[in-house]
Image (cartoon, rainbow, N blue to C red; front, side, top):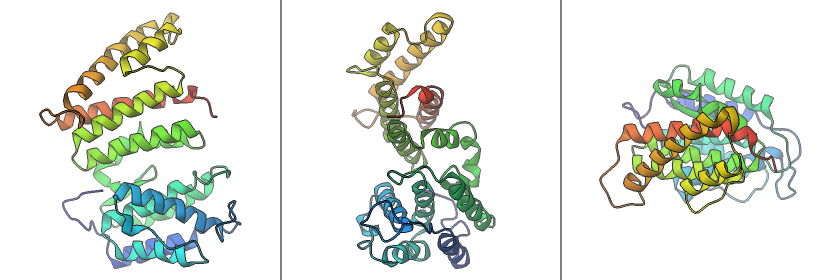
Length: 277
């Protein structure tokens, strides 16, 4: 959920109507790949609603059965009638669905066109587009080096998509002021990365030892491997002492933000080495 000093952030009825029109104008005309759905748009809306329910933690947002137009009308209704955080997450989830339709290549051009129109609508508000998320404009800078490139990298690679979802949860926990949850999710994302690279173990430290034993970052890259080992030790220490899995003092928001961003950079650096299947 997104927070702002002004809860509405300028997302008034006019902005909501324009966002709904963007949604209508960017429906996908082709048939769905899954026979259970009347159209590709209905399939994408279903994916978006599932993501929205998960992020918001609210089953009430779920839609009706995928019959012609009913599901789409329900989704547009969320944009018109729900609180601002739901509106922003719904639009972002629909953008995300362009890369998550099973068996369909990432519809990159359609996604970029959709988000460009969304950005135009949001120009008069406190919010803007960051990757596939709609966030406060004051938070946009952090996307340039980590968040947006990571989402683009993960599209179409199942293991990376799962890591990206977990990383997204960590970022959402930061935005919600829950550093302990963010630390736990970031640590899990790093474990998932090492596992996807083929380095298993009972802990992050064990995974890194296995990676080094198998010759990961050897030769000229050895100093980087040593630096990563020290970094992982710090991450493990912070998570073990200050995550939501341990009954200790509340962690520092700054530590949590640093850890989440560092994990994001590591996924961005080593994600290309993850097998696509």
